[in-house]
Length: 349
Image 1 (cartoon, rainbow, N blue to C red):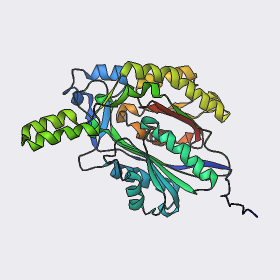
Image 2 (cartoon, rainbow, N blue to C red; image 1 turned 135 degrees about the vertical axis):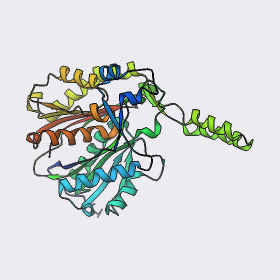
Image 3 (cartoon, rainbow, N blue to C red; image 1 turned 45 degrees about the vertical axis):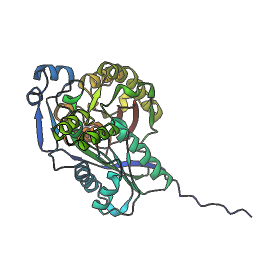
Image 4 (cartoon, rainbow, N blue to C red; image 1 turned 180 degrees about the vertical axis):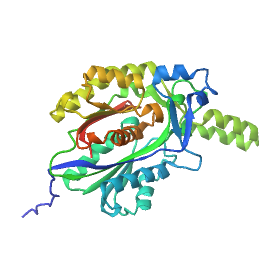
């Protein structure tokens, strides 16, 4: 007789139990940025909505920021780290291809031996993590899952580059996802469009750095230093392509997420989009016809674009400034390099 394999019990629903944040201490103003690029405070505000952005000190790492946000989320959720069944860190700025930031974070928090891994999905990474955490908890593979978006983009900025450098900031946001008697996370609408793979990315690959070896062998130290400055990979984007894609395509994804959740814009308490650009956020609000009672995350004004960290950071701020929306529904959507996207409707803790 063929044995029947056991399976985990399937849970009825999941929800976010707590949201945490870590914001670096260094505040970079538009005037600071304009030391490096030919621009002005007025132009940056009009084009992006950014007034300041946060950047981490040299001795503060992606893992340090992830830990700060994670401890805050765990405290808000009232959950001990030892109860975590998985730890997911969404990041594109951890400076090691391996090992992952997640395994180090898991050890720091005291969550070992929970499975831990990084997600590289740029500005959609947090929503990708939420989709996976929801599935892990509902399937019974984990009771609680920590999802962290953490970025130190300042390590990959050329201050003189005009397409994206002035947009970017550092920070970390985190959520604890666990079981719920009722569904608190809707089906995820997520995907990718690799035809625009080059619209956002790096100026060089790490393989290019190997060309420094020949200069070093020749003993030309000055040439090595100058070449390293030019070869070190930094961020850049095709701004018009990204703007058009985000404005016209992501509103459709956001509407699909509402449809999948079985709710309308009227049912929402909050809209928490990726903090890419204030003009993109405002255009999505118009296209979705969000009513005035819906609180909109506009954390970009003070934090800049923090990639995978931007949605949980914006959610954290919204809850602090509008405690009355606690328990309400929020539509969240992330989109970025790849190009990738992800969206869900979630019940706010």
